[in-house]
Image (cartoon, rainbow, N blue to C red; front, side):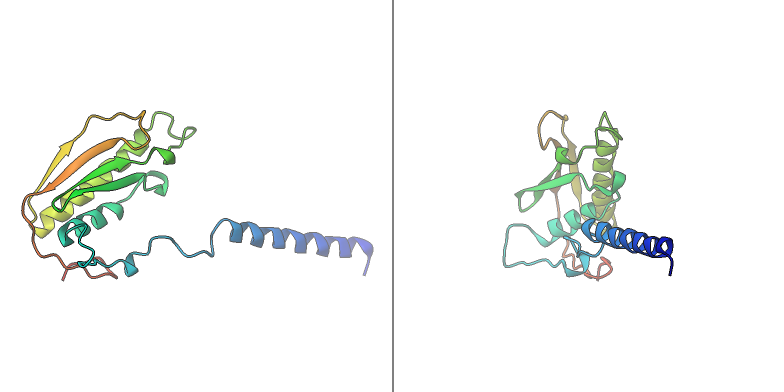
Length: 160
């Protein structure tokens, strides 16, 4: 085999190896941190109600800009929780004024409200003035006015 042919084969092998290494480094083969099929409500922990769990779960499964899920949830009591924006997930080049990040908060709120309506849960949502200078500004507080016994199918997120 000629020298040029050997060099070409080596170059192709190096490029393929680099491609595989970059893909593996990017996390393509890694397990996701949040797996909805393994998500279960544990009533023995007692830090939130089953209804809260179902509503929050509906919210975190909402669509978000650039698939960033820029939200945090704080449990305030057994019948209320607060949505916070995760400002560590801002994209200054793509979204310099954080409009898409804030729209993602809206998809979270919409998913929670839709799920509550579907399940017959009386829910009050209070919107909070945004202070985006904070690392985790409060966006909205959710108050469960009545609770239904909600049981979730962990694989499909459908209710039983």
